[in-house]
Length: 128
Image (cartoon, rainbow, N blue to C red; front, side, top):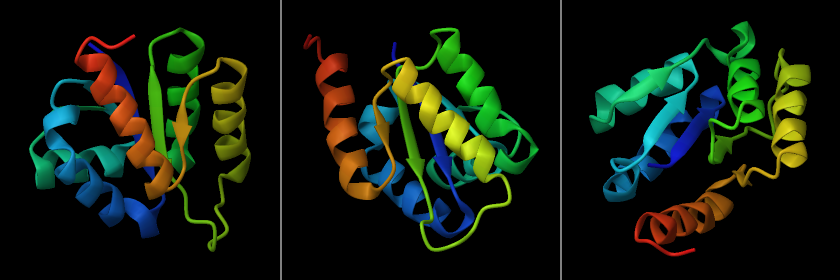
């Protein structure tokens, strides 16, 4: 089973929930990890089980980064709000960097998230 991290800044949480709902048939076959409020929304609105970590500003982004370093995350979908300053921007940058260092596929907007979910679907169907 593939491990997928889901993260969204406040102004993008609804977009992520709608995206996960649209691709529920794929995400229900994955182990999902998310920062706290994003995970709650996915569980409540979509009905998928999510391992919830701390909220981003309280270290959740760093916790996901740690899972990546330990080889426990295969894909990251992180819908960022490019128009709003984030108080935990250094943590966000660290997470993006750790994805790059460990060659973890990362989507930061809906267009790249769609490409990523198609790859997840392919891998779940036995594609290499």
